[in-house]
Structures are given as C-alpha cells and as structure tokens.
Length: 100
Length: 328
Image: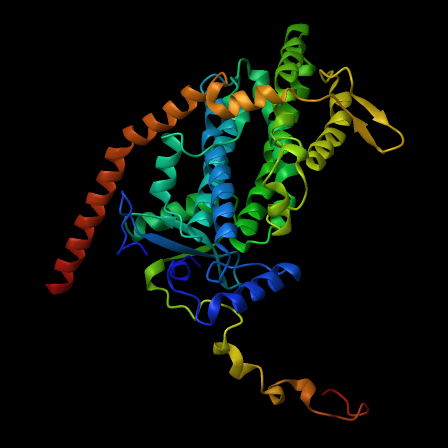
C-alpha cells in the first residue's frame, strides 16, 4: 500500500464513504488520492457527489482499514453458518398462535 | 476496498482449489472482488481494459473542452463545463477501480503520456464546429452507453460499480447533445448544414468505437468467457445502429451510409462496413489528432506539477503544526 510504495506523487490512497441521505448508513463508493484529510474530503465531494448523491462524507486512509482475510468464502465466517437457532425460522410455532 | 495484499500473498491452499472457486464464482454470475484470488490473465485483461477506458475518459475531455470558451451561450457553456467535468470524474472512478487490481495511478498516467497504453480511437478526430459537440453527445456518448450498460454486469465488482455510476451520468451527455442538435436544426440553413456535416464526419468513426469485427477480435472470446464483456463488438455495433436510425430520422439528418436499410427478416438494420484500415491507422497513432492529444495531456501533467508539489508541502506544514499544537 501507499506508505511502503509511494507513487511518484506520494499522495496516500483514501477510501470514500458517502451517506446518501439522512437515515442511511455511509456506503463505500470508491477511492481517491489526496495530500491530506482536508483535500481528500473536498476531492471526494467533487468526485463522488456532483449530483446531490450525499449529505455526509467519510474519508479514511486505506492503510488504516483492517480487513478480514481475502476471500469471502473464508473459514473466518464459518462460525456464523452453524448456528441455525439464531434464525426465527428455527422455531416451530403452531399457525394459530397470533402475532409471532 | 482497495488493498494490494491479494496480489502479494501466495494462495494458502494451492492454486487448484482457488481456480475452482474462481470458476464457480463466474459460472454462478457472482462478482469477483479485489481481495479474491483470480487468474493472472483475468487481472491483466482487466487492468488493460479499465486503464484504456480511464484514459479514454481523460483524453475525451479535450475535443469538447476546446469549445468551452467558444460555446454560443452561457447555458451551453455551463452544460459543456459540467460534461467535461463528468469525463474527468469517469476517468477517476475507473483509475480507482484499476488500483483495486494492484495498478499504480502514477504509473497509469505515465503509460498514457508515453503512448504505452491506448485510449479510444474516436478522440483522435478533430471538433471542427459547434455542431460536433452535439454529434459527440449523440453518437459518441450514445455508443458509449451501448458499450457500457452491459459492463454494469461485468464480473469484476469494482469495474461494474464504476460503470453504474458512469452510465447514470452518460444519459445527460447524450440528451444534451441531441437537444443541441435539435436546436441547430430549427435554425438557419447554414446551421442545419453544420449538423449534417458533423454527422457525416462522425458516423463511421463512431461505428469503429465498438472495435474490430468479431472475427478479427482475438481477445473477445476470452473476455466473454470471464464475463468481463457481455456482448460481442458486432452485436453492440448493430444495437447502436438500430437505436440511432430512428433518432436521425426524427432529427432530419441523413446517415452517410448508402447500404443502410431496415431488414424485415432479421429485425435489424443492414449497414455498410467501416473502413477498418482507417481504424488500424488511428490506433497505430496516425489519426488526425493523436500526437496533439497526448502532447496536451503531457503538458497538463507537467504544468500541474507545481500544484501537486504545493499541495504536498501545505499538507506537510499543516501536519507539523497540528503536531506542535498537540505537544503544547
């Protein structure tokens, strides 16, 4: 990533997250290079919200993101697959019980 | 997410299981994401295609940018500004997608200005009158839409997502072009003549935008197997012709192809063959504006160096101040 292998410009890579409107989560929309956080925010505004796509922007240096291992089919997620009792459909309730 | 770890770590459980997992992902029409294992050829093909696409957007700013100062009204000037700014944005979305595959942005810029990577041949033609601005929106952005809408379902996630954003914006580009032409067609005979002249000059180069015919496009089959591409060049070209003919009639211009006619049997238009030798020449760098386009991009990059340096120095000083403030 950027600090170990600076480009000719050496500007770090930022990931951009945009909140589309109030009530929604910030969603990752892409990345950009900037000299610092302030520039990353203004560039993110110019690049990713030219048509009112957002009411709030987060930018974070890519190198600061910790990520799970690389493949989505990784055993990392195995513990969530074998606990069927976490789902409401696991429980048999007679049809004539209301509101449940 | 953009990290380069995937390219650097060796596969943990041998390449066979990973290849199989990749193949299954493609077969199930699921998306490949940056940190997934992928065959080298898939990665290389994508980097080449996405970079070429990004370069096209960046170079594509020039033919239209030349008319910003000469636009006939404030309205047209503002529209043209917004459109050229969008092209820059599209280029940046795509460079961002290329970086998720391990490409380096400065390196991509260098490859473009050194002529080591290509961009779309269409931008090597000159914009001779303001009608060209309208025709570019109508033909060139129309052809881009034909090409790009299927790419929204491309197998590589970041590329597909960039294309979704781009396609939303291209629709404005095409409509502003057509509206501009409708306005000129309501004008004087000279203005209508300008529109027809621009149509005559841009029609064939626009058809060439879809690339060589299928039997001369060696990489197409592999890209389609990987679902990077969804339709063949000829298929997309035909779709563009079918889409454009009724628009030309409505506008009142003639498309410069004596062989163009509706084919009742196929349900499509028959049309003439573009001059493939011309396409080869333009791709090889012998188009009317190749040298000028690349030189302009190089000059912009070099003349912008002091701005980038100043921004870096400013960021460093701000950081130093913040640190001093924190200590005090």
